[in-house]
Every structure is written in structure tokens, then in C-alpha cells.
Length: 192
Image 1 (cartoon, rainbow, N blue to C red):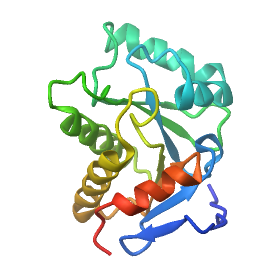
Image 2 (image 1 turned 90 degrees about the vertical axis):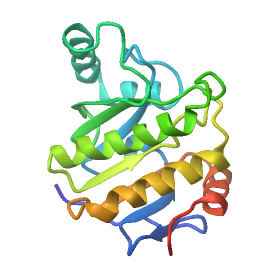
Image 3 (image 1 turned 45 degrees about the vertical axis):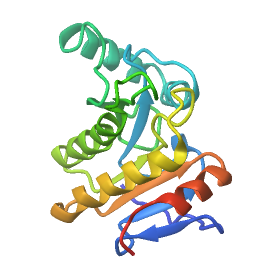
């Protein structure tokens, strides 16, 4: 798979020697090997990022999600866990589905569960021998996780993971709106 260069805007920035990119764009159009879906526990599609990925990727993604539910997670994917399916019609080969925490409903474990979403998704990417993955801002939409706090958790988790992994060459953090990317950039904790 060839990767196109992406256009950088004023909010786009790189960290960790270029291994992490912060961009504004559409997660479904990212030219990476895997994109991460901020899924709900049913794995059967929904609104926001989840619905957009299922619509753009086509029925193959839903078919594999149904099989995962049937065989591995009949009660639904637990918060913080991650599974991988085909990318279907997306340019990404795979979709990594993870369920973020609903802010205020996890008895003080929101940060731990959000960190697990990023860590477990990155672990799956490495297990599949992938070198590039794109994340949305997990749990910051209807699940209500404050973007400034999510920025701290996600940046620390990604940096800690990449400190011991050499396989992943690119972790792209994709924000649908520039203002969300700006909040992330003000609150991220990457070492420069």
C-alpha cells in the first residue's frame, strides 16, 4: 500500500520525531493501514464516527462485527477493549473498534479506560504487523469526555506505547474540526 503525503494546515503538527501527526480531516478518508472506530459496545454501528465508518466501509465491516459478537463478545465489547475487522471499502485495510468510556459513568475509572482504548488499539495494530494507524478523539463526542482531559490521557498513552515499540511509524490523530485539534494541541503532553 502506498501512502500519500497529507496536506498540513495551521493546526496540523507532528510529535515524537514525526511518528505522531495531529491533523484535521475525515477519519474515513485517511490513507493508513488501519483506522480506529470509536464504537459502541454493540459493534453494530451507530452515530458519529461509528456510523460514518460503517457507511463508508460497507457491509463487510458489519458482517465481521456480528461474527465477533456471536463468537467472542455476545454481551457486547467491554469498555476499553479493542477488536479488528476488515476495512471493507475504506482505503484502510482494517478497522480497529474500541469502546470508550462514557464520562461520569465509570466510577472514577474514565482515564484508565480511555488509556486502555488507545493502548489496546495500538497493540492490535502491532499484532497485525501494521505501521500506520489513525485515531479519532475517542469518547469526546456524545460520550462527553472533556477534550482537554482526553488530550492528556491519549498523548501520554501513545507516547508510552511508542517508547517501547519500533514497528509503528505513524500514529495519526484525526480531528473533524479545527477547534478540537486546537484544544488537543494546547493540552497534549507529548515530549517535544
